[in-house]
Length: 457
Ligand SMILES: Cc1cc2nc3c(=O)[nH]c(=O)nc-3n(C[C@H](O)[C@H](O)[C@H](O)COP(=O)(O)OP(=O)(O)OC[C@H]3O[C@@H](n4cnc5c(N)ncnc54)[C@H](O)[C@@H]3O)c2cc1C
Image (tube, rainbow, N blue to C red; front, side):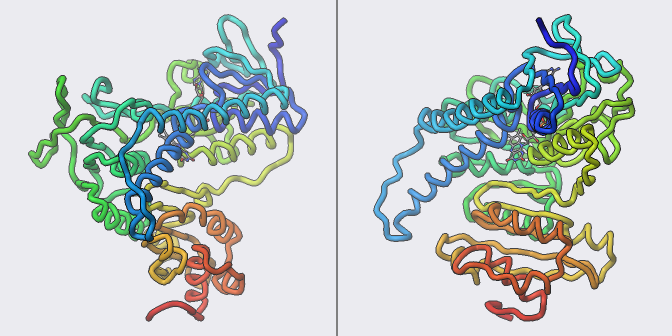
């Protein structure tokens, strides 16, 4: 017999939904998790994991091409896309199996099917009603497009880009945000002629200007073309290619147009609005404790306004599970969520940009930028970039911004420093192993504390 009542019913088994399910189960709650597709959602099957596998294959291609620069003889013969896809899909499949095992171990009642929130604390799936003491809405997001620009054929979104069975010759990427920049980076490493079109004045426009400048410089060196501050006006496709028109009057011909203009909240068609859930531009509105306007109905992940990142979904899921279990967890600081763009080079940041800090604290905000040129390990890796710290007047470090290969791995330390509201003097005495890229962070803190070591003035 179907068990239709539970302490917690969750609609959507992506990062937010399954994290809530596992944490609630750990806390002794009975959980029903409803998923219409695959447990793991966008991040595991169509997002974080497969894109990072492609980026790793891209890195290997670049390293092979550049092997001679470090005295290694190797010949780059090309990309075997079937082999790349096998590698990528193998990783996803293994993680998916692991996740299914975890759901089983947590005794989560996994219901396969499309759910509709029917009000109260009830979700209906194929005529069966599942009622919880609490409900979490976690239906995630979808690839957005622009008005009049229909996806299909040669006009693709990230989902199709991840499953291409050929390497295109020429691609236009519409959108210079995280997803656009990551695919541009992969394709350039695979030998594709790439042009990014971004309406805002710079690539990764949500990052500190320092990061955009560094990334743009690196992309120029990599011969990745980009047109910023330029509006797209239309695209036409036929059997031979796609023709992309810009407001400037220019037309770019390509094999494919990747539309990477952001992700919309997947909140329509699941009964939310009909049941009275407060929605704004498609996003489910919550308070800081992730409560919607309806009693005992919470929302987590990409459908809640804010950063659309998997680890934010995880943390929100854990938060709500603990909240329901009466643990009174600490409210999540949205600025403390680390952000990484995994392109070559990487961009990683946490906290406020310089301009956000100035808006908040006034013009006495101080910054220090350490050039990776002074960091031994970065020189060994042949990467350039830098670390920029943003400090509140007479206060702690409120922003850390990094550009360079592998700097994503440094974000853990940066995030702790930000979240602990550390002053440069607190961090300066901490020892960083030599030679590592973490030393770049250490050097920046030493300099900001007034005792620079390897800094050229
Ligand atoms: C190309 C790409 C790369 C990305 N890379 C990164 C990265 O490197 N790092 C990072 O942190 N984030 C990354 N993201 C973002 C990340 O994938 C999302 O932030 C995360 O998946 C959001 O989790 P979620 O639980 O809100 O939604 P989702 O993961 O989208 O999960 C929602 C789930 O709900 C299910 N669902 C929807 N409606 C119903 C219904 N009515 N009934 C039943 N089930 C339903 C869906 O099938 C889906 O499984 C990337 C995204 C993309 C597209």
